[in-house]
Length: 534
Image 1 (cartoon, rainbow, N blue to C red):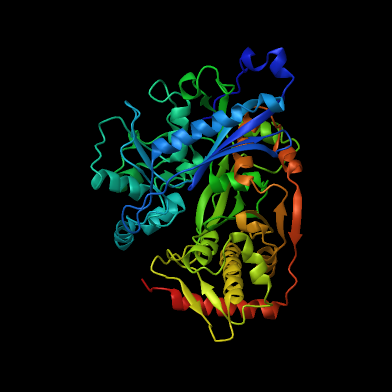
Image 2 (cartoon, one colour):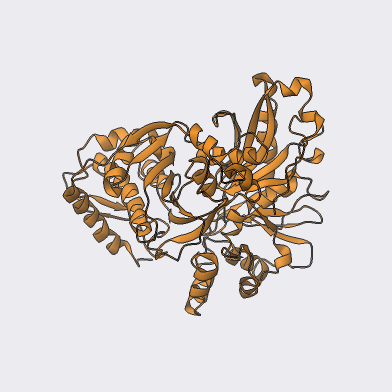
């Protein structure tokens, strides 16, 4: 349960502080780096600090991070933005945490020392273990309890590997957590009273959490051999988790004692930050991959082939305030929301490959002008299955494929085909969502590739839906900050947050249905040739 609202100490409401503009700070602990972002009352990002983190690849298919480096990056980015708060006449009223989701950190809660490196969500070392569980008939149970599929993407088999292959013992104060839990524990005091907790969205990515009854599953913990006492307490996404401890940032930090009151996995935070508060509203985040989440409403939907079901957010008791205790201005909404999700593994990574792998472009900014220099890809189709195919196919043995080449084609056709592949992959996810009881009604986009108007027009044509880019594409950070600020009274309701979401550009379908379907058919044929290759 979320903690009740507390009266914030006089330190935060002294005359000099009360006159300052209240802000909420987001910690965004991502896959390639950590950011701290300051979000003002208009839900706009007004300051940011960033630290890159190292990627470790000890064996093919293995991806690891250093938990200590992640925590130090959190500390330094928070210190940087905190040092500039007074310059902007601002005071922090809340902190929210968002994170790469399925990555597993194991640490000793007695000493605070990690047991080796974190195993990142991209890591494939447990693929064989997942296949063995599926062959043994456990997939229906997994789908029913967790809404997920048996894939090494998720957390439980990573924890299982650490216990079986990594030599961990369960009796040494062992704590397993996703990155949010590690950051929260350290931020609230670590070995001196640190809060060992996660939120419902991150818990729903572990293969250990029953998303219907919303608690750790005894049956699944036993299946994977994970003692429940090693797992964090699961709390709502919105509500008081704790306060910044003196030991975390120092007694003279402007963030000392600031409430930590929001937490969500990065894609869930982006859905919230895009103000997708009503069923059918859908967001697409273009990053290394593409992540499509649709608000499916307050009732857990039936499984949909090729998609996963996840908790979008749980506002807990703070939801009564956000929605209006009497049904108020947000009548018809619920403090609990589920989502259907499709995870596409390669989007921005495809642009990086064209740049770094084969030298088609020198910089990512060259991608759209080059792709626009030709009217079509002239039959070239790229299937960027560099690490297999995600939703809605889930084929880890698929491999990257280029089809339709001839002597008259060049760099521009390949660049355009890669942009088209991004739109085709999202369209496939949208089509799968349409088979559920709630179909997508609008697509709100964010992430680096959303700057490409060509991509967004192709996506509108393929999905036959309006595609809208917001003025601020920092939606993950905005989601984390507003979840925290909602709990602490910086914002009063979901309707208020919805009114602050502003449009930058919109794209309506304008290609002929025949042209759209012909292009998609070529994509489907190419995908079939890419499958089962590995």
